[in-house]
Length: 173
Image 1: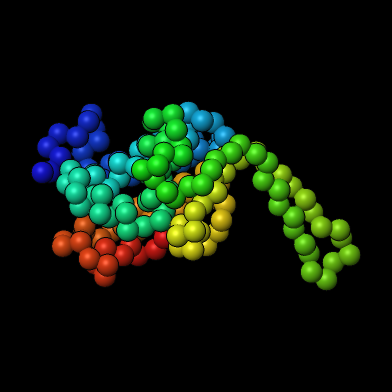
Image 2 (image 1 turned 180 degrees about the horizontal axis):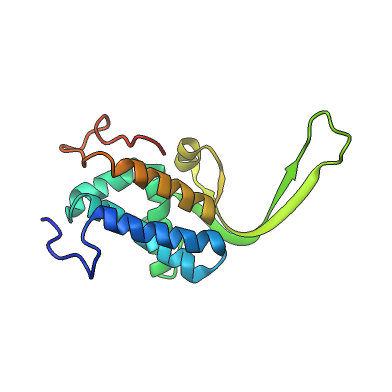
């Protein structure tokens, strides 16, 4: 069933992506603000329903197809229900607020390695998500950036019908 009215001026998946991009700008400015993270990931969780114009079955199938969307779903639903580690979801093994440390080496330089750190919300991924996403830990702002890229590419193609692995593949992730 198509979305007939949307909400306010949000009428399409492209409109909701605009909201998501606005939320992402706020998240980049303050990646450890729980209100901003909540807003971003709950919005991102509902992109499949808007993409499939309210068809919850197809949206659910699409969401389950991609590790990125499964992780987002667990994070968003966990936040909404005060429990990230819900047994209905198996993409995230744990979450934490910590310091992410980066060490930069300059090959051929006599300078010592440079160390920097920043506060971050992090998620430990379970094996299937780790294998698909290429890392065992992802920060909230990194996950958000991947979602923006995914949906920006995905909205350039019509929703696949019927849903199959070839036509459901996004351009990039």
